[in-house]
Image (cartoon, rainbow over all chains, first blue to last red; front, side, top):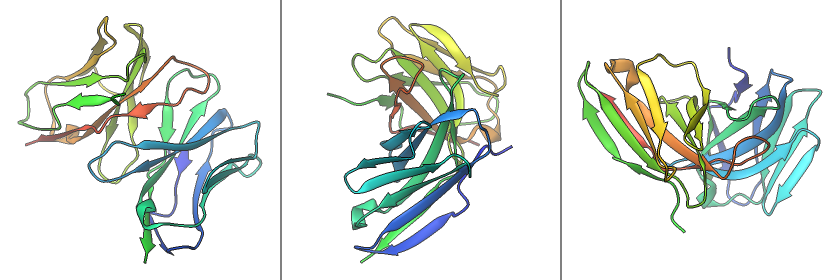
Length: 113
Length: 114
């Protein structure tokens, strides 16, 4: 039972344009969502998070949008840079859980020069 | 400040053997979590420890065990290795548990079981 889904295994975007990565979830108990970026041979690196009481959080070139009614969140990267090429994971945490992050399968983002 | 460190970086074992993976959290972090990442999937939660006590366990068999030491470092042990245990094992640390704590990950230990 996949509670967090990233339906696009890969995404190719031109340098300088906007990258939009999507994530859907099924569990209404999730109240905190995170995006991580992962390069090969490295561990995931925290990018940005959002609480379920908000619908938008921005940090520099990265913005996360949350649509609770649709159980959908998205990560926008503007403008996209070559160093953004990586695998992006969406993760979620339940409000009644102190520990467990539930992860999507990841989307590989390729930024074309 | 050093990030989360893990050792070894790579490991090859045969079926039935035992393995111990090690993790040192970021200085000041008291919580350590372990995840298994199989190729093409997101990380799967195995354990979380806080102040040397197990705070959470994922859906993994009893062959998997862990502990946390007084200096907050941690070990993950896997007994009777199976081919399906081949994966990247990730350790993450956070200052506390609960709420909206961000977890910071180490580079992982890649385990291959032959």
